[in-house]
Picture 1 (cartoon, helix red, strand yellow):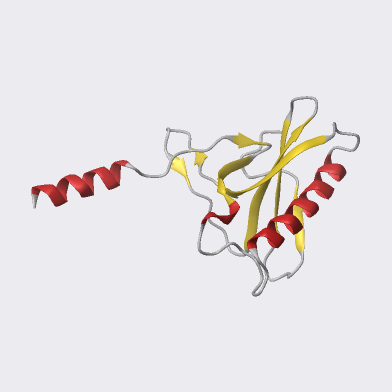
Picture 2 (tube, helix red, strand yellow):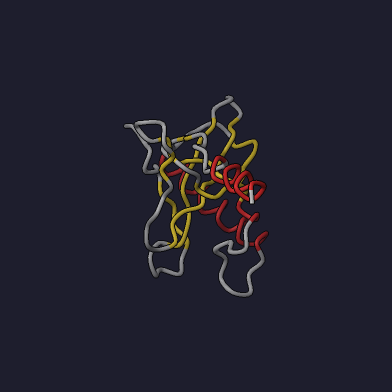
Length: 135
């Protein structure tokens, strides 16, 4: 019984942690690391990542016309946000938004765009800034 209590304590101590926030988007785990990737039925995760990165790159072009060239792109799940008292705030919302596209540019900057299917819309769309944005 003492062993079980120790395991439960360790599990409880390993709660969510806040992620790095870029352009208001919290950068979580890689997109294809869970059971549900948000892809429509019959679409592979790799194809879903490719589609989301294309929509997000278009969103970055619209948000910041003339930005430096993209040298790397990754897709992540949305992570936890740092709360005012050090707690971690996990994003909850109805609908399917958002995975987070992270772009590394040739000038050394890093940009992020949210991308997903919003509400019941089957089409992907980009969201310029995340809920943690300070503008």
